[in-house]
Image 1 (cartoon, helix red, strand yellow):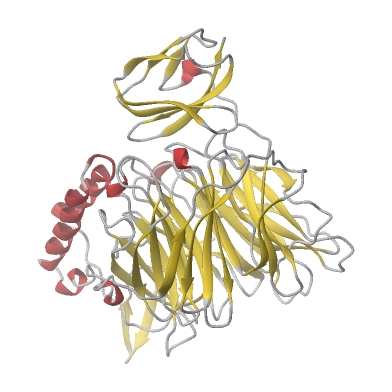
Image 2 (cartoon, one colour):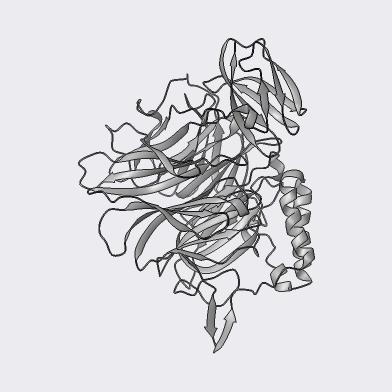
Length: 574
């Protein structure tokens, strides 16, 4: 793999381009701003930003952002001008929602695991979907149906670890939806479910629901002229310091679509967007992932060269912090499609990132296999695994999901397995990355039914026990038919508590469980095995005693949340 520095020959002048652009047919031309080296004062401000993610307030994070802008202004006013609100986001009032409703729970729990019958959430046509886990707030599944100029966006919720769902909220929008993604802001403070939608008219917008009652709180336009987007968030315990990060493609006169990035401000709960960055690259397909401590990872495919690119931003999507684009695979030899990128929850110097694509030899008409590229400890990407091409098989669209927990290395991925001659039904399959390899390749759906291969099955984990789960639709011939959910039976076992930063004993316990931690604990939640909260403790000292005398005999899952992690342990009550 190679990294390339970009040069652009304009008017016989050879000019160094900033932002890590690549000398290729994908480059729009020299329109970038040269980024000078950081002063010592600037570097201290960037270092402060990483500290403030976990220990600062929303106001301090925004003050830090403005201090960075002001320091740049003393060096380069052009660079300082990059730190500004997006034009469409200056006024956050949006009118794309025609009506909205919220609904109370109305379903009974039912067992639902891989191999059992798929759980039908919604009948009829469905054009897109997503899933997210919100800790003690449960699982959320969103979908949308287009109706020729008007669309319905709907959200289902599970409070019992995916055993059952109920319609939680819906909204009617004034245009068809091209893409939708949900992000749950759950933790200490105000809690919301965010739905980011791309309308067919190119409007990139967000809806904000109160996570407790399903009421639509606010809507906002982010920007216009968008043709695709990807979003992710960081995960400090406090929701008021949470931020959402995006890459997106905008229409351009120079080419079909140019790559941009932006971020929401701390304290706006994903609604106010700033600091748009133009990569000046003509791009076709994109994805983004947050790692830890400010690290953002992006991937995209060149519109002209079909090269597979990767890039990293070290400072929360800061517009001056993108590294040089890395060419991971050359389009003239390898056709790469639908790239997904996901990062384990490690810092940049010790990171592990996987980039997976549908792949085949350039010019081939065979089915797609998969290729997995890895980045380790800040190095370049390298080809780590290549799927064996199988006759009559092709890998379809893929998805990935990472638990928001420092140090976590479990990445859930999903994909469509297509049978080219239709001798078998297409399937939704689950693949797990454990920090070293992909394992547990399992079929997630009832194989008696054809899965619609027009969209990736969305994947996540259950909030309790970390069981893989997935959302998909069956095939109608041209659209998804019915929104379905299924989940694995796998419950991750706990590590030996003697090796953990948190120790708990005695286990089994007859009533009193002693917790010894390295720091104060924000919240301890005790769950039954079906995912229901049976006890909760908040604002605990580093050494605490939990009274569990009133719990029935049996196995429980205990989630311990502090500023830097949210970890689950298995306990037994005798």
